[in-house]
Amino acid sequence: MKNITTKQLLETLEQRYATKGFDPAKKISDEDAQALFQSLVLTPSSFGLQPWKFISITDQATKDALVEHSWGQQQVVDCSHMIVLCAKKETTPEDIEAWLMRLAEVRNVSRESLDGYAAMMQGFFSHMTTEQQLSWAKNQVYIALGQLMTAAALIGIDACPMEGIAPPEYDRILKLEGTDYATVVACPIGYRSADDKYAEAPKVRFPNEHILQSI
Amino acid sequence: MKNITTKQLLETLEQRYATKGFDPAKKISDEDAQALFQSLVLTPSSFGLQPWKFISITDQATKDALVEHSWGQQQVVDCSHMIVLCAKKETTPEDIEAWLMRLAEVRNVSRESLDGYAAMMQGFFSHMTTEQQLSWAKNQVYIALGQLMTAAALIGIDACPMEGIAPPEYDRILKLEGTDYATVVACPIGYRSADDKYAEAPKVRFPNEHILQSI
Image (cartoon, rainbow over all chains, first blue to last red; front, side, top):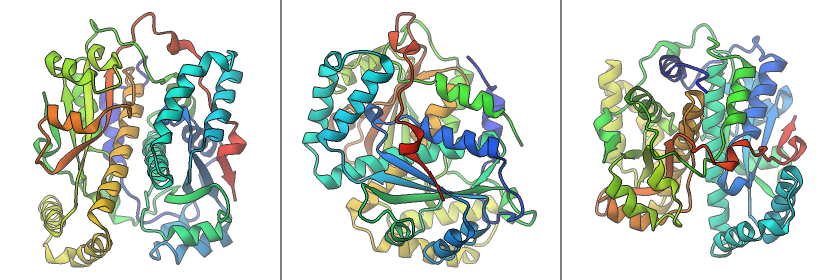
């Protein structure tokens, strides 16, 4: 089913930009925030394993504590919701089993009927080091970042993907140390300030022929 | 600007699923294909550097050659367009300079006015090994994968993200060996076959409280 025309799609993606200035007085409505949280939950992941956790921060003291570990980027403080995307550090056989049990429960099938799928997944992860498992999980988190930015643009909310953060300091402030999760990337969301000059700057991409190839 | 309601957004994301069976007779229109290619081009990336290349394959012989390096997944053969997402292997000072020149050209500003930005980027990459640069580029490619899957769902096109491929064999078949780019992940797109039983299967996610946290 087509929920949007190609023209609307491209207009949305053209309008989206990395917002440098948020209006601290403008807050995202609860309905919109819940929709964006749900768009994170609905993000596709490899095997469906969801090796992630998403933290939404509206507490001003926490935002204030994070900004100095974010290259001083003021969006952290001024945004409506500061979203921190975290990856699961490793994917153990127990994690895979937990996922299979969840799959069996929701789809109302037996665990045994998933044996083939289980073997494929166990094989995929058994060849990976813990470091490779974290890289894999980070990749999945970036799918979520992509879906979040697109979803936000579709419902008229501004966002700023942010790799320039100190993940270990984020982990400390967000009490992730000693847990299964680690900070990967952040994305403040909210509404641009009236004077954000980047809002109207032309989007810059390399020419299509450098990026696209058809065979 | 709101281009879609939260209800439409969530319906779209709920309807999207990893398509296991494509109808080989149903092809994506040129207008829709161009819109999806453009959604790849418009994907946000760190610093705007676009460390990627996207290959769209409709040539049946090439698709046939790829399937045996894709765990035999038939979607590679049956899809309308097989999209292969590739990462730039390293990001050199010359790459950064090329990007700055492009930025200066499109925004009609002097290269010198971008000196501060240049220094920040050079600093970011100077601390990275080539391997870390590739990991960083792969992360960006996964943003593109996320945006592609969401964009496809919005315009009613089915997709199947696919990590189960042999990237070195893809590189050989797609003649990427010896170039600056390497295969990362694939995503066949097209239209589901009438008998794809996964189309109606309930989407499975862990409970929200395992995935979302508010502070």
